[in-house]
Length: 143
Image 1 (tube, helix red, strand yellow):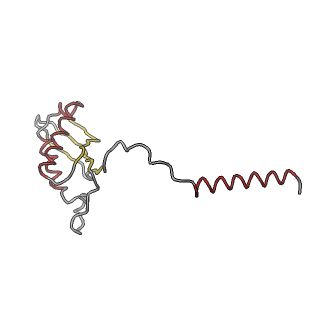
Image 2: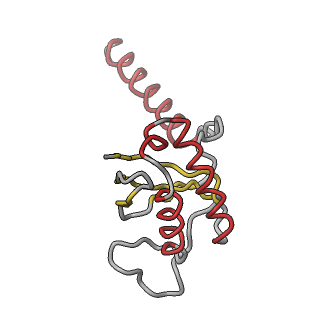
């Protein structure tokens, strides 16, 4: 057998052995850093359209960072447009109350939104059994 063929076979065999080790036998990589969002993000499926206290209105969506994924309610399917969370109607009511008492100016500034999100988190803690780590307002339009 020519020397070049032996070298080519040896190189292919080494690549094969390395591939098997890398993808089959190697231990998994360490878990790495903690996720930046400490929990499960649940986005309420329907948008909100709320009259604000200053006569303006806001259209927005709401997401919550929960300590665990919401469980579907008691074996029944949710109404159309609603998610699996049994407390969703209570959550939507709390969101409407808190944001409806806000002004367009509050919702237009970062500091104002943070204040509203803290109020909403407190209200959800009072009215539900959810363990809400954070409230997010990913999309918001004020007119």
